[in-house]
Image 1: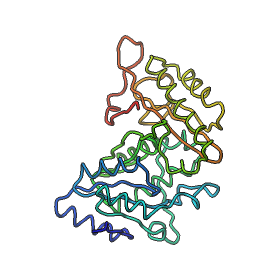
Image 2 (image 1 turned 120 degrees about the vertical axis):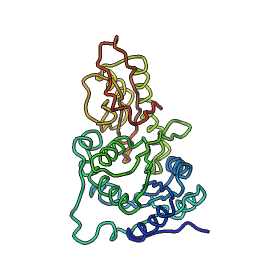
Image 3 (image 1 turned 30 degrees about the vertical axis):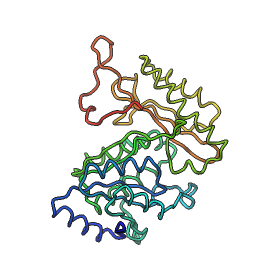
Image 4 (image 1 turned 90 degrees about the vertical axis):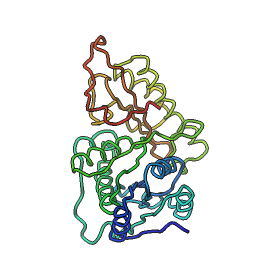
Length: 303
């Protein structure tokens, strides 16, 4: 039996109500399509941890600026559907643009501070669109758990804060970055890269690995960490390199606690992002304050 494709919020809620009334847990994997193994890892986790799982596919116009790649963003719906069905997804929510953003739509959500730095610096429109569309997906699907990938670490932080602040009864699950054998983080936009550009793009993961190595060896000077990463990215058009608090995405005076080392750069016409997370050991002898215990809520990957 093929996976049902649901097009409207009302029909999606009705499907979920039936599942919940039967005592089933519901998992959601939100995507814009163009699926790859990173998305597949999220779907597998949802299928293994919930009674039923929903994959959403919607290329969200609200998170693209006029000059960005909305029109050419990969749209591979039939292949995405086949992948989802093979993994065991129970329903696909593929809303229409009119059902998501009706005439005179005017209600957008912002998550202050968490969305301001990193990608928010060069794409100030982006997280308003992300928070709004994810809220609408949550309201339609009504999941118990929602699955996101660490590659979009700031997005994960925005959604976690939004869920906390607005009292969504949803567990946000962040899973590690999935990489190709050469280290490149999987992304739907990787298919934009030529063979030569793909080789250049590998500098991104190599540079972050260098920064991670410094932190693992005890380096806490943020300037030195960031400069080491920038040196490895010298041949790319760098958008940003930053070490920030992994949960709040706020700047740090010194690297301590749970940190996110993130970078964005243009390879040709394609903008790519990548990151690593690291938790500095807590020790009263190191001369630095202990990390806030509240920041232990989410598992941190140093992959």
